[in-house]
Amino acid sequence: MYFQKHKAFDKIIGYEFIKDELDQIADTLRNRDVYTKMDVKMPSGLLLYGEPGVGKTLMATAMIEASGCPCYTCRKDQPDGDFIRTIRKAFSQAEKNAPAIVFLDDLDKFANEDEDHRDAEEYVTVQSCIDDVKHKDVFVLATVNNMHKLPKSLRRAGRFDRLLKVDVPTGEDAVAIVKYYLRDKKLDDGLDISFVAKALNGHTCAELETVINEAGLYAGYERADDITVEHFVRACMHVIYQVHGDDYDQAMLARDGFSGMRTRTVVHEAGHAAVSEILRPGSVTIVSLLGSQRDSGFTAYNMESKTSENSPLLDVLVSLAGMAAVEQEYGSRGYGNSNDLDKVFRMVEALVKENGVYGLCWTEHRFDNSDALLAQQEAVVAAKVEEYYCKVKEILSLNHAFFCDIIKKLSKKFVLTQMDLQEIRKKHYIIPFRG
Image 1 (cartoon, rainbow, N blue to C red):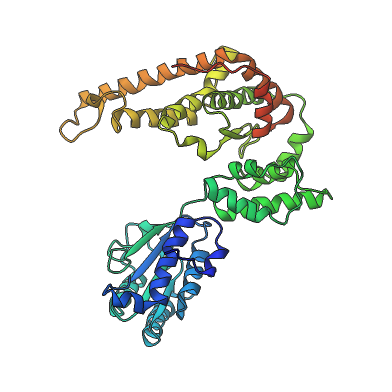
Image 2 (cartoon, rainbow, N blue to C red; image 1 turned 90 degrees about the vertical axis):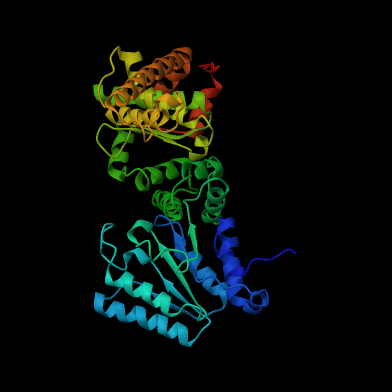
């Protein structure tokens, strides 16, 4: 039989799987007789967890509305002693008015204890209250940013029967949320919704909403008729990448001439962008010479491009591309590569030691933690990094014209978007790398 979700979930954009889960739980609370006839117990609690800004509280309130049950909410907004009494009162009222819900919003903020001290009075109180209302038609709903701040005894089955992770929106969810936030905005024809979604893929709902609103604020301040790509990119730079307005404005006004370090930054970021686009077309969303630190740039990638089986290996090649590009253009590796190298060695080390990509004999196992094995593992990692570095230089050599065109355009514009890279790509025959 087709089952129609409760209209309360219409306010949640995307996240269809999570809405299905929440609607199922709400139905058990709203239509208890159906489940009683089947001799099944009601779930005792649900814990929604995920990073801040993904909409956990919105989801929880939708489920509460769909359940039709009275709800008693606890948020940490009182001194410790008063808050303990508030927690106990909420559970007591829920028991008296059962079936009911106790909603513990931001449960991991109930106590100021760190991850190694989880016996705070607030958690002990919640735990004992949950036990006191067991089998008394009281459902406990909680949201949590950091699961590890909670004691394991609190988040176990029987207290919270279901743990549901709310991830940052990606793919179709990201597109749906972006469309929702853009639904009444005046957009320039050049601002592609799919580009906006890809550029914000993997960021929280709160960040999506803020970036889109910031773009509108920039357009309004300029008295523009529509929100353009430039407004959106500037909003992204501000909100996501911490490049503030004054830095952005000065850069846009001073596009002639670079310091030696800045010139190397152009080549470095162009290398990342070129190799990523050769290996995974459409993977780069923004390339910028402006970073959160002086003389730093960045290359941002669409998370959807990192779903293939070979992704870790491709990530290694892309991460080495900045250093390889600088060496290819200047004859030396220069400086500013430490972050890339740290990341590369960590990735290759994981491929060698944990995943056995280069042979099971190199992996870590419980029977051999000798110094000899460690030395062999390190030698394999170093050799593989050198091998990949040579491959990256070959990729850049095979597609030197494409790489140089990115350098030229990036030097003029400071910031290139996915659409800019697509236009550059159309002018060149890309030689695929077979390695």
